[in-house]
Length: 113
Image (cartoon, rainbow, N blue to C red; front, side, top):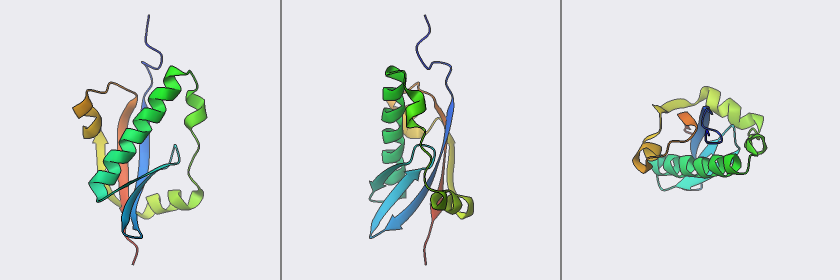
């Protein structure tokens, strides 16, 4: 018997920006926000949160419930942001041995003047 979600492949996008001295990473497809002390820390935290959210949804057979797109202004920031990283099987997931559905995670950094 195949594991629920074993054929699932999800690509996620995020915008990363600094607000009030804290780096924030915002997943656009799931509308989840994480923070960190630097860009990489915020990105790692976001991937971990998205991973948990997706795993829980798959286990409860409610995957459709997690896809709530971020507000349009964040998608606009992503469109003009500087590409920070594009990774297949993000390093944070590879290190934990995660075999889940997130195949690609693209983050773009936005710097405000």
